[in-house]
Length: 92
Length: 166
Image (cartoon, rainbow over all chains, first blue to last red; front, side, top):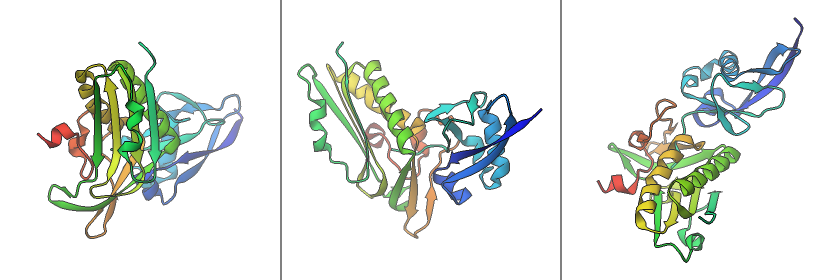
């Protein structure tokens, strides 16, 4: 099946940004031509492979899509959405 | 019930409570309650020199708005003020402020810890602690499901006034 490569930006904050040495990472994702969707969990797996320094923190992180938390099973659109990796928060 | 007045703000300067006093003004309320979280110097024997706060600003504003609105509905509050400061917050300075008002005091008393617990669980703001040796580290409480009593695990931040007073 033909596939298309998407460049996806994921913003990083606090300890995640520190581990990666950047405030965002760019992932090149190959997805089927007839869809731009994959699950949030798959996206986080890709992030871990692309940026191993995040692996220890990833299990406790949440993914935000367009400023809303999503679960690992949620289908996300890599062609249009904005992504952020949210480590455990500590405001207050 | 009339619509509640919601004020949410993220600032990079000192939080002045008096600037927000009139946001709670309402002729039908009998209780105003405020919580101010400040940077604490000592945590478990360690000295905190200062704290630095970072946020996913757009998302934090949305989450704070959602949180304040939900609190107003849940506790029948006439108004909610929720303000968080970013950047450096020195010992004794205010990092977060919550103000609520209601017809009677129980609603306001109950709303403050509820709002703070949820803010510390869901609002994407992080603190970086700087100790007296100049060492800096980001504070990330264990696990995503931090529960509603995560403030006790917070090494440098603020706990609810009720807990501080024991």
